[in-house]
Amino acid sequence: MASLITRMVRGAQVVNCVRAISTTAYLDAKDYYKVLGLKKDSSAKDIKKAYYKLAKEYHPDVNKNDGAAEKFQEVSEAYEVLSDEGKRAQYDQFGTDPFGGRSTAGAHPGAGAAGGWNFNGDFDPFKIFRDFDMKMRAGGGFAESMHGFGSTQQTSVNITFEEACRGGNKTIPINVVDDCGKCRGSGTEPGYKKVSCPYCNGTGFTTQHIQGFFMQTNCSHCRGTGAYNKNPCIECEGLGQSVQRRHVTIQIPAGIDNGQTVRVRVGKGDVYITFNVAESLRFRREHDNIHCDVEISVAQAVLGGTVKVPGIYEDTTIHIPPGTSSHTRMKLSGKGIKRLNHHGRGDQYINIKVRIPKRLTERQKALIQTWAELEIDTPGTVSGIRNTGDGDAKTESKAKEPEKEPENPKQSAKEEKDDGGLLGRVKKAIFG
Image (cartoon, rainbow, N blue to C red; front, side, top):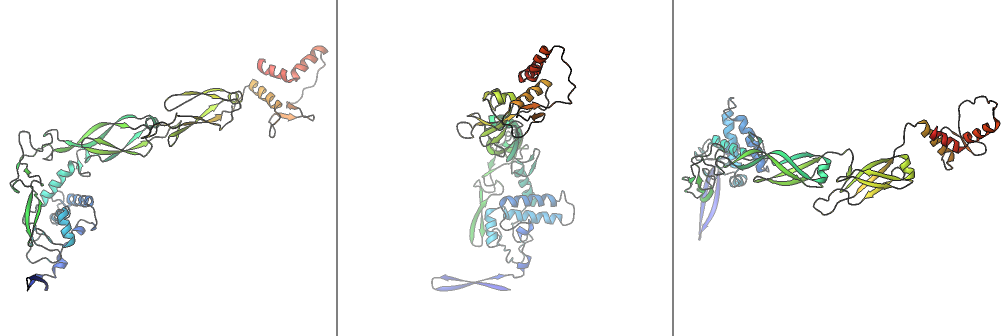
């Protein structure tokens, strides 16, 4: 047995106060954090999650194994202390029971079987679990309800590329916490009202004498409200609010990008919505600008012309200058995406691609060969075209047939001139 001696001064008189401390109790004291499988720096949310998980696992109505009821009470006891900021602070600092003078660092003999804390006979683990479960089902954020796990705190919505650019409305199903439809938020059965709490005389708190000090805590019967609910609403179990499944229409901000999150007010709470934007088969996004590819024909590339370009808001016809090559980029100012939270729009960039035909008719092929014969800056050779010794390009022909004597020398000379000449071949390609 060890002794703790405190020196107190009353005027000139020194008084020694001696209190017995059981050293054996150090070994018997419970570690509430260890009971819940937590660390000392765990958050209030972690404490709630750990308690609810263990309480459901060891609840006597579910778990019939030996020791389950004792474990359930132990878990409830730990939660009762650690969930209260005042009790937890004193437990962390002193390890003492503010309600019964008990100490986890040195419990006095006969202090009760509640472990490190004495709850003065008012400790009911089943009531703790029942109240906790009711609260969580009304929007605690993770406890099960008929619509899932409490109110929707955050969710994601899939939208198309065009919806992200233009904006619009979308209807989604979410869970919201709102006033109970039966009691309209009062928490009492219709026709009844709450009365002044008889346990705290309507003050909302109770006073406890703690080792020479007085401590005020919220009344556990009225939860600090001062009003006692004798006839709680059956629908919401006296909470006044319930988790409700609703289809809510939300606004899609024009210009929203993939992965961005917005806050939307739904019911009595805020819901954070993350938008998942699908990729477009036609457009590519770069900040507030969009890019698209547009194909033009060889004739358009050489001679110029016009082509219709698809846009986010409308199609636009653009002019193709003569001599336009592939990968030429054109810009349409102000035809891009609306700037989110700003005025104006980005730009649209058009990447020109010249479409090369893979199959040609005989006439098209003849024209291209004629064109090739006229080229003077060809880098290399052209299939089907050979250069003669005098530098003239001629079309390669198949095996030469034996020459025949012309019946009419003048007519044959004329045909040979027309057929062998460039103009003649062009006419033949066009008119046959």
